[in-house]
Length: 417
Image 1 (tube, helix red, strand yellow):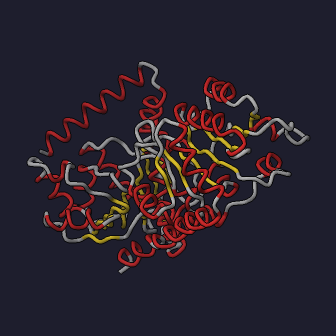
Image 2: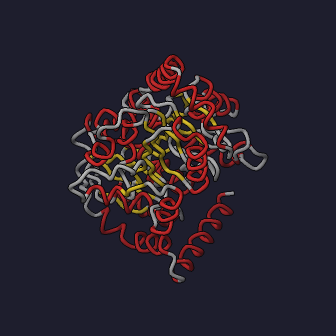
């Protein structure tokens, strides 16, 4: 099975290189990054221990940050090495101040695994959620590195638990010092297949978004947009066109009973997409326009279009309620950034793979909507016009966050034994 796995890695690598030659941006960035890792790793000192954190992309890295930063705080004499698989992570965090070295992970061939692990010589290695690179795992095991994975989720249909999954399950047993999973289902599944070195530590994203909320500062542009407005505010995060159409139609149908101020941060901020949003919301103003203006927004402007990246998490503090995009596509985006502020959340129908979405619906702090305005307007009206309904939903969000904090401490308490 390892031979077949490695052949698959070589074929994937070949495909990425072909895509790079054809001008695919992400493929080109990956191929360039693979060539540069030796120079990056050479900056590590040989007289200090190394903790290696690997994340697939930016989202998984944000899950890793609470553990990484707390580990660094507790072990200031250790070096931190961070690797990424995807350009979406590396290109954003390549200058991350809490890491001594950041680079792309070379593809998981036996030779690359031997070279990189020998150069880094890690004492502890942390993978995040779904990252299973079997040549690296085998090589780290031979070098007696303490290897962990956290915020992991396992489901019965995964290849580990299929008829051909014996070799993969064996890697879980032999190559990880401990597996930190998010839920009881994952724990029972592993234990029923003989993987005993595992425990429930929850999802480190809760710790991360809580950190963000505590550190969130006021936003002068949002302040200017909302100045003098005392009514409810709808903050829409990571939206796609189906989300935006639904919001525009719902506002048109509800008229005065809909929040009269909307802050809308689309997932894609291409000029084409921004113009589409401006067509749906003709009374809008762009964040960048207002930022460079010395005047308050014109009185007809009731929608602020956020045309930059990286500030959405702090904008949720301005919401009365929040709408999270992506639910009409492959799946919803991060709802916890809004929930951590105690904001009731709405999202589209494709949420079932996300435990936090199912949980917040069950607790009464979130609602799934379909493409009809009524599916949004009915629960929204109840929240906005019944103080007790809103208070209960907001408290449900706050309680849910508090209940799920502490993953970082659970992980490090075992790692540091």
